[in-house]
Image (cartoon, rainbow, N blue to C red; front, side, top):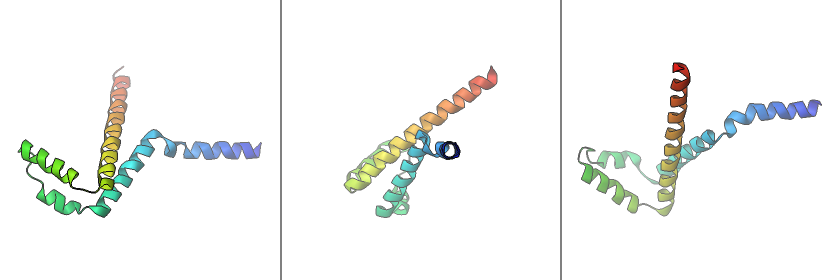
Length: 103
């Protein structure tokens, strides 16, 4: 019985860290670390054109993406997908919070 209860306590303690959100947060952080190891992000952001010039801004990012290593491209796509998932999940959580608060 003690052995079973120990397992239950371990699973209960680790459950928040094994969620989908935790996985995508880890993927986002790992992707940024991987990108930062290969790319001088300070220089990239220093050379970024003004976002108000939408055409130049879009071309800059497309060309920068195209001229990076394949690994950085994969990490960039992983980071974007993780970020989209986390924003979507956060939005659903906030919306459900407001729904239950107003009811």
